[in-house]
Amino acid sequence: EAQVTQNPRYLITVTGKKLTVTCSQNMNHEYMSWYRQDPGLGLRQIYYSMNVEVTDKGDVPEGYKVSRKEKRNFPLILESPSPNQTSLYFCASSLERGVTDTQYFGPGTRLTVL
Amino acid sequence: QKEVEQDPGPLSVPEGAIVSLNCTYSNSAFQYFMWYRQYSRKGPELLMYTYSSGNKEDGRFTAQVDKSSKYISLFIRDSQPSDSATYLCAMIPNSGYALNFGKGTSLLVTP
Image (cartoon, rainbow over all chains, first blue to last red; front, side):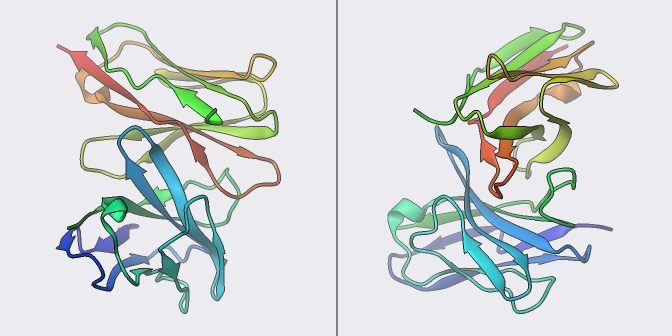
C-alpha cells in the first residue's frame, strides 16, 4: 500500500530535550516536505527536499533541522524544542515538485512541548 | 495581510445541499490552485487542482478559478454526510515551490 508513515504519532516532551520525528514513504517519491498545522494559522511549510541531499527552507524553518540521506526518509529534528513548537506536524511526499503530482500526506504527529 | 484568505466556518448544511467554499488571494503570481480535504485526525488529501483561470469538474465537485478577481471556489453538489471535513485551498506560483494554504473551512453535512 502506497503510504507516508510518521513516528511517533503523539509526543509530549519538555523544553530543550532534542527529538526527532521520522517520516518514510514507500512510493519512490523525489519530493518531500514538512508542514506544521496550527489553529488559526493553517498549514505552513517548514522545510522541503527536492531529492537526496537537497533540502531548502520553507516559510517557518526556525528551530528545525532536516536531513535527506536516503530517498525514502526525511526526518524532522528539533534540537532544542520550545513550547511554541507545540503543533500538529505533517510530512508529505510527491513524485516531483510539480503541482500536477499528488502530494501524499502522512497521518500527522501531535507534539506537545511543556 | 495573509496571502490566502479562507473563511474558517463552521459551515453546516443539510444532506443534498449544494455547498460553496471560497478563497481569496492577494499574490497575482499564483498559477496553480488546489483543494484539499482533511478529515479529523488525518492528513490532507488532494481533491482537485486547476491551472490558471477556468472550471474543472470531477463527479460532484467543481473547482472554479477567477484570476481577475483573485477568487477561487469549490462547489459540492448533492452533499453527503461523508463530505463532512475541513476543506483547504492551496496555491503556488509558477516559479515557486511552497504550497500556500488557506486556514481551511470546516464543513458539516447533517443527515
